[in-house]
Length: 144
Image 1: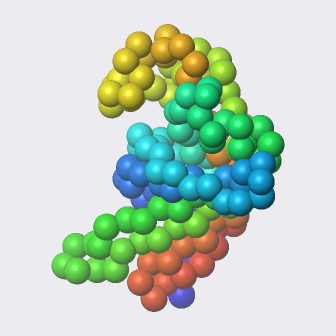
Image 2 (image 1 turned 45 degrees about the vertical axis):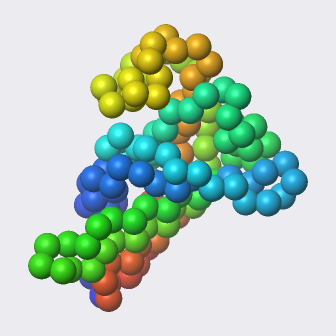
């Protein structure tokens, strides 16, 4: 079993557009929803997602910042195995326009028509505490 570095895994995660973000609701159940990371995965194990203030996701994170992310990459060239990544971490809610601008990409205009000035947008930062991956017969955890 070979070990993947955080840098190598972050690069691969950045090529997977959508992740499933799972939160714990006020009732104790798990809620999951697809979120686009817009290719933004930092080498320190951080992922960033935009949402609206009134989204259930925001209320869930305010109640319990522990979250999970799952990424599934397409099969590789010549039918190679797909990549699966599970991230356990904690989320922070950012409501600062300068931070919005630092993480903004043009593709976000589809969902947030006024860009960083869209009323009620929130940036979710998920900092990984644990990352586990499966890449064919290769499986492991990335040291953080």
